[in-house]
Length: 317
Image (cartoon, rainbow, N blue to C red; front, top):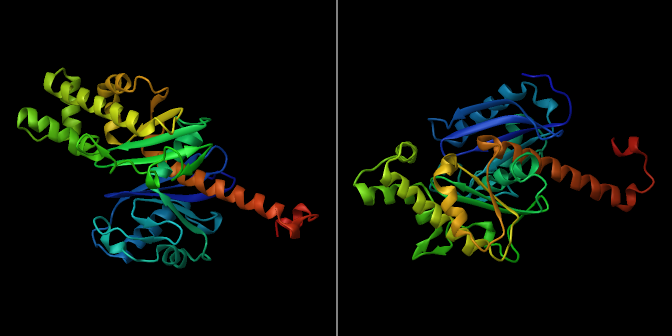
């Protein structure tokens, strides 16, 4: 493990098949000691917590040196209380009070384990140290098995307000006779290719054929790009983001669909960028969220009447 100095937090990205962890440092939200593992074969909450603890020790060894842990988790999830409501994935975590269970497992006082939505973490990572750094209004879209989304204004995630769909989620918004996720996803790409060829292929394989010049594969990605652009035009006209950041597995093939997406967005003054941080974006975003909350708490504390006139040394006690 690198012996970097400075404030650091343990960050996690929990996916449908893997867990990643790292130390994230306050200076530049840089990552150190990244470790990854598959979800446990034994599908119990105890085995899941064991994997998290094992990864924590790989990243930090001494858990006493870190401020706490911030976990990027998929939904549905109560991010304030740290309780999962997922039934279709990670069902063994359903109704488990993860915040308190993890705190006890790590030997920490309660309050040192926090959670945030994985799509929000992805966007915050890009806001803090990636493709949306310094951008006032940003939207993050992760393109994969499903469609993740998040909206940010001045570095803060927003889940309501003008132009923001309920919860900041676009996957289930009605679009072209179905919902957005029907067309803007792995499923949509595969269905389009199979409908044209009768063959079921993985997205990476379709992209390989498209890059090799196969006409049908190219057409599938062009159609995907057009649908993506039209969906964003429909969804973002009121929010008016400066930048849309695309992440997820499908974004790795952006060269195949980006031109068509940009054409379909004609009339909306927005720049589409591909993620700079890739798979590390949620880890960076979890760290960004932790230190942003820390700064906010410190500001509130300094503004409170009982702290007026206190010395810096007294405030650090």
